[in-house]
Image (cartoon, rainbow, N blue to C red; front, side, top):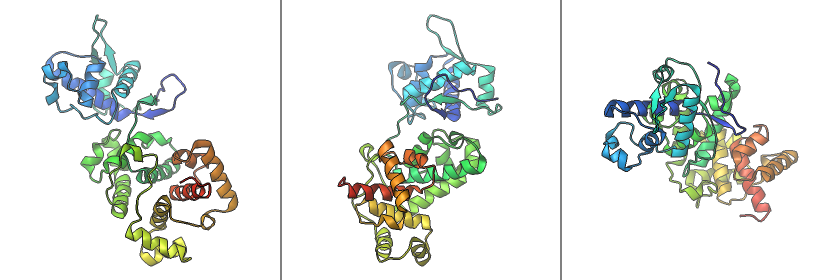
Length: 324
């Protein structure tokens, strides 16, 4: 079946796995209670809201209670509306309408139907307190897969799912499957690659906790010992490739160390990374989209620059502009 996009001009996200979660939760409610409910009730169960009705009917004990906390109630509502529009759910015509799972919805839940549920981004899908450096790294992996497979980015993973990965740091199949937006098929096809990337990042930088306010400005207080060693060699004139060879690291890891150093305010020569025209291009795109949105800058420059190089460029240009 060809995916159908909701009407409107906003970008869309692949919410197929979330759609299955909504149907699965509704099915559990009906089986446990012998009656059906409306959209708001299912959303309350998914986000773990202990409303009077949820408590009275003991729905806090359902397996699906709270499994969708990473998604807002407004987002669950949009997902359910798309399921209704596509015919996977139906709604009774009673004074207080309740939901019914259609035959198509049963097939979708069972994985017997190959389709994609696309829902508009409405601003109701925030993820806060995630590792931005890891998110950027996962975006690069997604771009590589997009180029190899010739599919849109959301068919790999949407940005929200990547941010959740950068927050939850899943490195086992069970943990990866628990990330909203990940199902059995994506675990099978993509899990190993993304978990490897997450594991390498954690090994290099450790598990760090981020407050919501740190998402836009990820400047760390200090540079780690390994990063300091990389920085010292780089400032002594050793190239990235030579540092990688000497230290048994990948060039990407070395760039990551230098990016962290730049974020900490260390002085780096941007000319060693970029030609003058490249520097001008990045500066112009950064001014257009704002330096906090590296993903937009990456896209705006045609994906030609590594995220770590962009992060280094951002900090050096800020230093030169007197913006700390």
